[in-house]
Length: 355
Image (cartoon, rainbow, N blue to C red; front, side, top):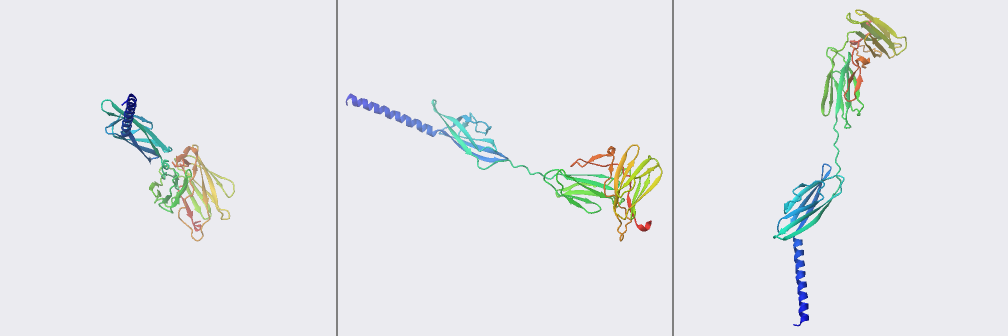
């Protein structure tokens, strides 16, 4: 073999060794690499992304870097962890559309043989993940106040989830309403029998809201009577001996001059206000003492000639009092209503033949 042939064979041998080394290196890199799988699930308005990472290789690998680490990763997928399989979860906002991650790892085979590799993981979110708003639940409030004639009830809906509210008196017809938010419903229930009293129960489909009882223990209802006769209204005004001088002013809706009566303690005065042409009318009254002033209104309607009644006929509206005795009721609407002293104990309708 001549020198030229030896030189050619030597170069060919070097090329073969180099090619073998390249094949060996590529085979090691192929056998050592991270394998990443991502899965996204919408939970409570957020995307929960779970990364499953396998460090593929004949020996355990070590995770050297993870990017990004925000959102925070919860699980075994952590920098510095050693092994073959790892899991980590990241939570993305519901408005996000995708998530990506890069994991780098290293394997040690022998004392000096170190192999490293890194791979990317990517997942695209499918659909939307908006947080479902909580459905509002009905919230009903109710309150009541007694006067000398009956019970004044206020109910209301406090949320957009409106509820049907039933108000049932112990005597009389029940009322069912569905008030709008901020628009409380008000109803006055007169007492038909003072001995039997009156209770009003407020309920919804959810159950009982409250039971309210007519109570006049804290009221002064000893100032007289008003009789609803078939000819008009008759006021019998009485001031107890331990009371104070009181001025009563009556103004009718059917015309005429105001009637002013001053009643001294321990005395009784009678005021008769007749109907005009048997037409409906009302009497506005003002009660004045040195300390307070109260007002209210009493309506009158013609008698039913076929069925005259001897039973009491309570006033259908809640009288108003002066500001010194006003109280706040109705938690739903913070409605200011009158509270305090009404001078009528009851109203009675007398038959025409009693006159």
